[in-house]
Length: 326
Image (cartoon, rainbow, N blue to C red):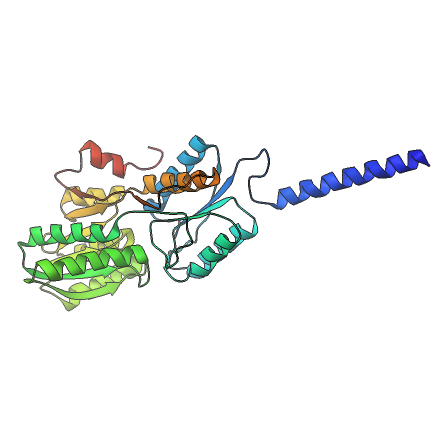
């Protein structure tokens, strides 16, 4: 009888241990003896910009001894998919989330749900209409729009007709860029008229169509501001197809090797640069700081620069446009 009781007790202990191990296996979090898991969720994954963010996040993961779980929607306008990715991260009980909201309102409920679940969230790249986050790591996007407007005004001699090729309404980062550009032109340069503002929906083909519409509707256009990577790619192609290289001043946002080549060739005048690598690194760093029971900065400004044909080969600009892994 005594032997039976001991056998039953040992069976119970083993079963309990297996149950705990199984539960821990389902948990996406760090757990005892495991690296903390940080879900890094960009707006999209296709653009060069997001690849640079990932490189920064991966570097932070190595330096800070955490695991980065990188997932994002294929399209930057697929708000529902991004919401699902965040919900899945919450359900897996990751230790923290670093999120670039594709929409300033659509992602609010899941961010607030994460906060209620005790999962710290850092917002990066683009703002959100809630205060339930640890830190906001981003470019001063309004300032980026101001820089673009000042450059456009300089190239046009303070007069002419310009248009804006935007991304999508409700995307906080690009809205801020477009507002910074428009308001600077309207306040400081009364002889420059903004004649049209269309959206390319973060899609290169659609951006090409919209830029073509702008050029056809405004044959005397002098300048075009495109507020992200896909929009400046579309604008550049439209200007080339129209035979308007050198006639329409193109000022864009973000850089790829092809876009930099277009600046060197004179097809694009200039590109406003962010620091996506720093965004990824600092985004992970802020939540790790929070997990270590410390308070990270509420706002981390990752800086704005302007790439032109004159400064493209300087060390400062080269450091910002270096492709991940090269």
